[in-house]
Amino acid sequence: MSTNLPNTPEGKVIRNQITKAGTSVGANYREANRARSKADFKNKIAICESEASETQYWLEVIVDMEWLSWDQVKPGYEECSELLAIFTSIGKK
Image 1 (cartoon, helix red, strand yellow):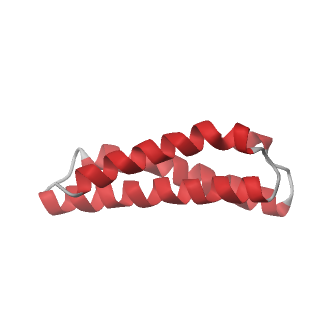
Image 2 (cartoon, rainbow, N blue to C red):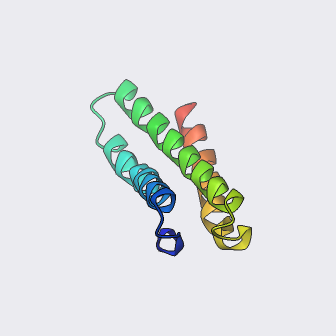
């Protein structure tokens, strides 16, 4: 999806941001599963939650800028929503 963004300075910044936030979710989840304590686990899950939310934000910006249509970003946005629900649930335990 990010490869379809314009090759402008703004497009490059948002491409970088969405790539970093989107990949950070998985990396932090992996780290959460190797946590040294319950507090460390909860902290890493909170980071996963934050990064999934940030990814949604960048997807909204992309649609608002009319770089991609809602139909193009909807699958990624919905996946982030599912991950947010999972991480929110895990974080409350």
